[in-house]
Length: 450
Image 1 (cartoon, rainbow, N blue to C red):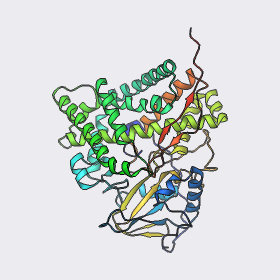
Image 2: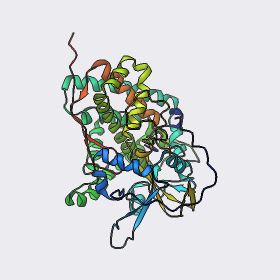
Image 3: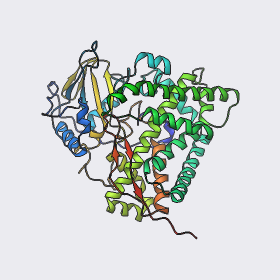
């Protein structure tokens, strides 16, 4: 979840595994050849069962260096492109913490945003490099005042309680839209100062923009998606820009007011920058936390011994459970970086202009860092997972907020509905970008009425 939505002062420093001892000078090697039938550039790979993809990444981690994958041309005027897959924990850390060489522009996702889209809607912080990235990040970080942060934490707890009240009263069948999606969305809207009457409209735009996400889409969906997604994005940005103009005239105690009034380097966020930031919040802050919450309920259902351990002493084990859910589920699967200069990464020589793929999901299963990495163990310590990125300037601004939301909801759910559980495996949207849960059926025993 790099560059999501919270201030640097919110998150506690995350421990990281010490790098292995340097064995001395090494001779540069070319990229390793991929094992047969493993092609991370082929959308079909991301539709394979999870265990087959995990086995493929184990084989890639065992190779002496990063593998280069060639992507198919995306149009008649575009040549072949490709990327080096960084699948080891140490390599992802090294690339994340060297922004002078591993640059985020022109984009960290696939495909990178078109220039006209960036001009129209503004650049997301996740796609920017310093000094502009640092400037925008400072504006956002300084807008999170102690008072705003205290109100956010109180709102998280109150929202979690209201959601459990509603679950008990309405008995919904799908955990994702009823619970997992609602908590981060309502918390972010409250922080930003989005009026209650406008939230339903924004939620509809999010649903329209992500309705056909994934690697497997029909021809009709592929044709409709770009226009549909951009229209939804445009409507959201117009709404937030309007709120920004209102807050400049009549400030309130919310994040929009702080962002438009911030005085850093002589300015606050422009209307377009505010819209781009809000769009990032909705994707990074809502979607990733939503998916982590859903994966967590499923993991605690299929690992009853870990669930029992957490329920026996939540004050001791809840933090560990949240971090292990984040490691095991890894809501963001990968981001890209583009090399600004030739670079030696371990024994492999990378050239200026080439791209690397930071494979967070694979790094979080690296046997060199995580003993028995496929096991779900809430007592795992240390747990230097990369669910929030690998450090550096793009380390997730929302790390602390995401943890707070997960802890608040699980604490409320399991205290009031101790037998809540998933009744089937989550329905996953095949994707090379995020570990998206489309639906998760669940059940519980309602508490007895007084």
